[in-house]
Length: 322
Picture 1: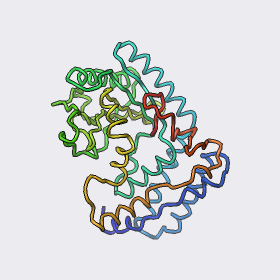
Picture 2: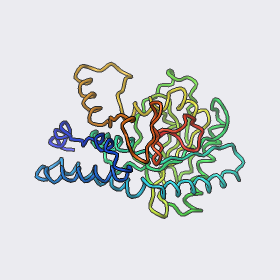
Picture 3: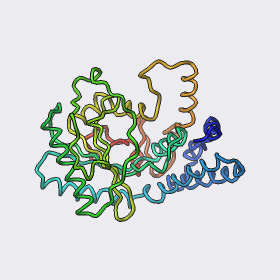
Picture 4: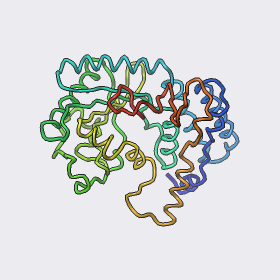
């Protein structure tokens, strides 16, 4: 990224989504289409600039692809069918393993796209619109046996999708949020080496060998289905799942990746820059004002009935919070 492009990043314009959500136009699909139209109008007005129009075009294209390809009940139906097939396959292995799935919700996806663009990353490398999570085993704490069992399942799951179903396995984007210190989380078990088969190794993000800063561990991989959908698959042990959801807390993990990093003292300038970044990235709206047939608000909680923005707070449910 050139210095001129970085300078433009300091003045990034993000269209405000909240007024559209408040219109109550009937569905999130209609809301999103209105939103995309407004983005393109702005892009046309800025067409003479060398950087901002490209950014707006990326923003528009990525959100439009998400809306048309993923944010619909057909994609959810395909995901549910994949879950059923995967559960049947895992049952034959006779290893305790739960499977859940989710479509990344609308608000969360917008914020992730904004984050990537603001930080100078390629938004087209985002490929977790649809996702599976497999939790393997029942041990409260990991050891060599539970880790070996995890990798055994991971290799069989990869073979299931690639060989049996003919899906493409994608190379992952670079790992982020690393910097784990064992002394901060002494009960997190870090294996000496990964056990993914050599032919698959370059396609897997292995956060067991290299955990995230707060001890988050999982294996991440991305498949492209025959219908063209990308599905991210996460595999965790029961112990690493418990740590992510109840010890380091999932929301804190997301904040560490997309939000403020409170692990070190920031200078006033850094704090001001981070506040500006957050103001640009975050979508802020009052759920009680939302009047859409795909949303339901009650008692301060909002249910996104397509993207499942919030679900029952049970991380072992079939659908989980994005």
